[in-house]
Length: 268
Image 1 (cartoon, rainbow, N blue to C red):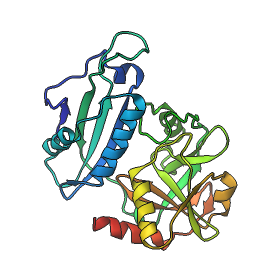
Image 2: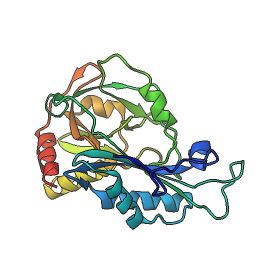
Image 3: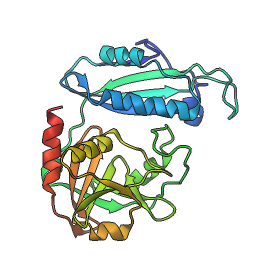
Image 4: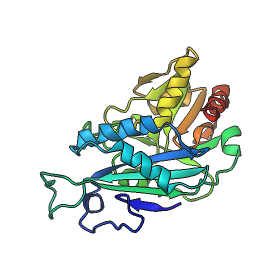
């Protein structure tokens, strides 16, 4: 496995690249399972949406697809795809004609404990908040300092993830995963119209629930809602769905939908 920069294995990032200078770019984390990028069309759809939102030229998706194939040489891998605006002169003003930089980096699959899918994971609350900005909500832009600071809040080997609120006290997501809560018997996921990332696995879980005749609603969610929730699930492009066994010292039951969804995912 290797790293390609603009399709070149020996490529380098220019220090003047706006992705490095300002976080002016987008990324996707793609699971390669059985040699096939999972939900690649949904990843590309979000990438194209983000490119339009930031004013980038439309990405050459077929070229990127080919580069992913070239970078991965094992059946199970993780691909990080980065698309920046490219280089520019000093200052925030973007160049009139952008020449985006593409980075396709393949790496080994993480070694998570199997119990995360069966016994569930343990969550706490992060002090760091998500700032609201409709212009960036939903897309996976490179500015991840809020998540970096939130993840730096614990390193005790006890918590598996942390939940983040926005500055209006609404639950948004975990640092690296979207959230679903079973409230009054129905699945609910936080609205992401002002901040947060609309995850591909979040979309897959909602799609699966729709097929089961139990669609998930999207609405504002509070800490009090989660205190009353009978079950919680985290979704992520790599893990699929993790049930939550504990939130802030409160025990949470494992909902069978989590295992059923992961079984469905394994067949995709």
